[in-house]
Image (cartoon, rainbow, N blue to C red):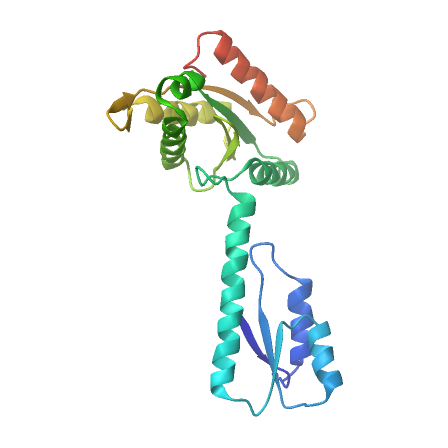
Length: 245
C-alpha cells in the first residue's frame, strides 16, 4: 500500500504511479492512494487514469485518511485470499495443478537459459482407493493432508510441490541431476511410510510409488514431454509392485 504525494522532486506522483502500474508484480497488487493540493476535476481524473486506487485532496482530514487506508488494507487482504484460493489446493494447502504447472514452465525456461537441470517427481499414493473404501472419504482426506505435510517437510526450500490430481502429487526439483533427485525421492518415500497415519482409532500405513524424469533425458525439453516421461516411470513403478521409484 503506497501513500503518494503528487508534488515530488524529479518524477511527480502521477508518473511514479504510472511506472508502478507498468511494473506491477504478479506477487501481489499495489494499492495506491494519491495526495494532492490540486482540486481540479481533471487532475483527479489524471491520477485515476495513471492507476491510482484513491485520491485525497489536501488539506485532508486525518480520520478520513485513516479510513481510506483501512479500505485499501481490506481490499489487499481480500486479494490475498482470492490468490490463495486460485493457486492452492483447498484440502492440502499445496499448490494446485495450474500453479505447479506454471512453476514447471518457468523452471524449464530458466534451465534452458542457464543450461542447468530441472527434475520432476510424479508421486502416487499406493492403494488409496482401498483407504477410502475401508475407512471412508473423510479418512482419505486426512491421509492426503498428512501425506502432503510429510512430503513438504523433506523438501528443499527451492523445491515446489503441488497436488496434481486425486492422490497424485508433482514435485519440481531444480538444479539437481537424476542421482540427487533419486536420493531426495527416497527421503520423501521414507518420510511418508516411516510411521502410520493416525485417524480416530485406526493407524494407516501409507506407501507411495514415484516416477522421476528430468530435462536432460527429455528429447524436446518441453513440459508435456517431461510430464509424459515421469508418468511412464510412475506406471513402471506401479506395474513392478508399487512402493518403489
